[in-house]
Length: 450
Image (tube, rainbow, N blue to C red; front, side, top):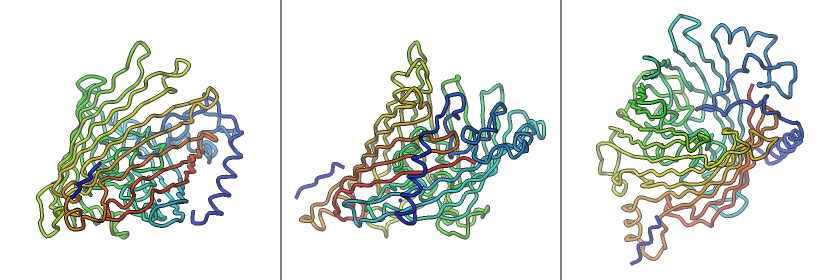
C-alpha cells in the first residue's frame, strides 16, 4: 500500500466593463510625491496628509477629496476618517470542481481618534470601524481548502471591524491594545503580501485561521488584549489573549454582539520579531517566530467522536529586501517565506509552506506598483491521509494542495488600484477526499480609497 504524502462580479460582463474602464485610467501619470505609503494592517485607508493638494481629483489621496476642508479640520482636531471599497473576481477557466465565476465585495468605514488631541492622553489612539462583506467563495468552484480570494470570510455580513484603544508608553518601550480587533492583524501579519489574491499568501498563511476560530482575520473583530515589549527599536516580543467565539462569524445576525455568549475558550498568542536593516543601505527585513494555543475543545481529525483539549500552531516568517532600486528602500526586490505547523490531533492543515518574491515599484515612474509571485503548499494531516488510504487504497489519494499566484498591482491614481491576478491550483480536492483536475484561475481586484 503506497502512502504518498507530499504532503472567491456578479456577472462576467460587469467585471469586464469595470476592468476596461480602469485599465483606461492607467494612462494617468502618478508622481512619487503624490503616492501614498503602503497600506497598514486591516487595509485601513488613511486620510490625506496635511500638505495634499485636494484640487486635482486624479492626484488627490482620496476619491471624495477634502469635503470643502471639513476632513482636514477634523483630522487636525484629532478625528481621522478612513474608508475603502474593494471588489474581487475569480473565474475558474479550466479544471477544478466546477468552472464558473465568483465575486466578493468589501466595504470598510471607520475613524481613528487621536486621544492626545481630544483628551490629553499621550500617544493614545481609539479606533472604531465597521465593515460589510458580501459575495461568493471561488474556492467552492476550485475545490480547494485554502480560500483563493482574500476578502472572503470572517462573516459575510455587516459587522464590527474594530473598536479598540492602543497606546505606546514608557518612551516607546511598551505598547498595548485592548478592545475588539482581529488577532490575525497582530500576529504573523505581512501587509506586503496582500498584493496577492490568494488568502494563503495575503497577510499570513490561511492555515493559522483554518485550524482555530480564535485566529480571526481582518475585519473579524474579537474581544482581546495585546502587549508588545520592545527590547530594542528592531526587536520585540508580542503577547496577546483573545476570546474564541465562533458564532460571531457563522451567524450573520451577530456581527455587533459584544458579550462572550457562545465562547468556546480563549486563544493565547506570542511572537518574537526582529526587523533589521541589511547592509550599508539598511535594506528592510522582518523575521518572526510565534505560536498560539487555543483552549477550545475540538474533534479528532480522524474520529470526530473523540474530543481533544486545546489546539495549537506555530509559525516562522521572513521577508527581506535583497536590493533596492535607485537607492530607494520603498522600491526593490523582496523575498519572503512562511512556514506553519499545527497539532496533528485536530488540524486539517497540518503544515503549510510558502515562498516567493515581490518587486516594489518595479519601474521608475510606477513607484507604487507591485509585482508578486508566490508558491504555497498545504499538507493534509498525515493521520487523516493514512486513514483515507487504508479505507480505500486504490483511490490514489494525494497528500497536499499546491498554489501558484502571480499578480501585478497597478496604482491608477493615488486612490484607485487595479490588480490582475493569475492562479494555478495543483491537486484540488485533497481536503475533501476528491481528485479534481488542476485549475487555472483568472481574476483580479479593484480597490478605491475614499
